[in-house]
Length: 391
Image 1 (cartoon, helix red, strand yellow):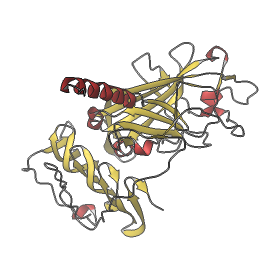
Image 2 (spheres, helix red, strand yellow):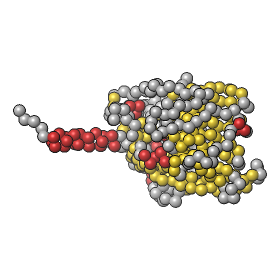
Image 3 (cartoon, one colour):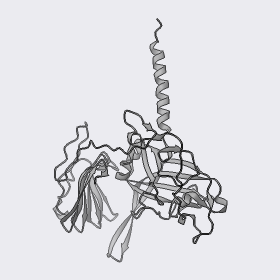
Image 4 (cartoon, one colour):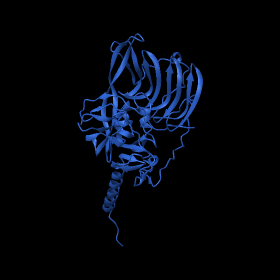
């Protein structure tokens, strides 16, 4: 009886591993109704989802910008929008080794992602130095995908870029309204992910009250038929791989135990990972000063040292670990607890010196009871499990 030599077994294993890794890498891209596509010619689909690889460097940024646009014929003008994404929001979108962002929800004419003003849909004007990015200033909608004008037809790329941003400095200006100096952070952007598909079969924009295509709504009466295998994004990264099925799965994990705000969070069982937190204070005046002698203490102040922007603890510049406080005009606005750069523990938001919101994060996601106060009186309590609000 013949037997395989150990070297042959190792070779077979490496070949299997390479195929498996390649299959995982191939998950990056654009998905229509959970099916990966390279082109799009039907626009009455249910969901549009963007999937980017998750790399360790992603966690080193303070916030993120998702830029979605269709370049026009002259290459410098685009139809599209840019959307700011907070770190907790992005981390809640991480599934295994991928970032999964649902852009269009079923029958929604506008993106599900909040824009700069925190509203659903829309965008903001922003001029970038990189000519390839062009000018992004239009509200994005399904109409941008389905309709164009003249030279923009018939086939156009849909470009999706994900940027990580950190504060590179502050601009200080005197505000007549509050008669105070207000600070505006200047962010430095780094491209951390890019994907694209081809838009085909776009219609010419005719007989419309407005000349811009994004005002045109898409007719959902004839739904798209997207062939292919559907990906269950909820199972990405489980058992070391991804899971596919012929039906969309809406299952969510409910194994997390909610952490009550009133109870101090225990030290994590992970070696070297200590979650530092306390019971939520009743007001900003009840907050004790931080210990400046403690290892990792830092301060971010204005150039004249008169205004405190942020202070707390970090393991390295920008990697917060422990309690971090944020201020506006020297007034305490937030207390955030981090573990190695990720929100993990107590999170408190103040308004006029009183607690407005108090809750906890767990691994970058809201978890447990979040309490909303108005003038010191409890108004409502929201419950979260693994970043998802519970009914």
